[in-house]
Image (tube, rainbow, N blue to C red):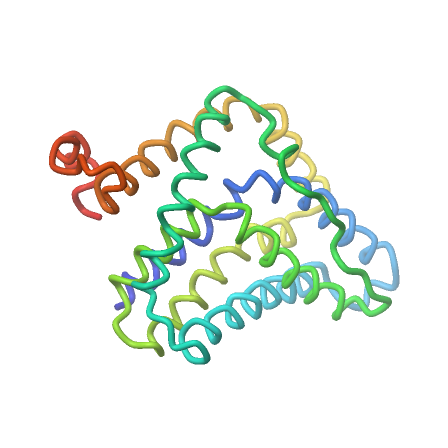
Length: 238
């Protein structure tokens, strides 16, 4: 069971790191932490980053409660309805990344919520981060639902899976909060300078995943028996 939670946790870690809409949020997050450090310094940056992670987890907990308990919708049904569309979107985005297109420009932009109270702002930022990143990375969201439906048999276990996924989503923000501002800025500049290579690598990784789920798992084209042998050496474990 622990291995199952670790798997969805790692999918959660990858979700914001491969979401084009998340990259513009990191500099603002670093600037927010820097502003708090330059203020009265009553709350350490690491503590604020922890509150941000709790905000992300709270968002995923809310989603988990809705799906696992209130609606009593099985993850299998969610996968059947949502995943084919999500993986089709992922395939299109993957091709765009391979061509080094500016995928982030396709997405609407908005600013995180602000408050006079640092604790409230940090928690709200995390909640906002989860709400923005989750729908703008439909492929990994679909992968999470697809894996979770086979890993967790009960609503309670599925809910804990949502929490594990949320902790994974918040981990990059926590690491940025623990790092000094200068280190965080260097990291974001490093990512920006290598954005073309990162885009192409992400596209090269995500496109086969999208095609595997579309053509083999969901068999949207009715050719699964023909193409499955090409995917099985890599994706057979799924």
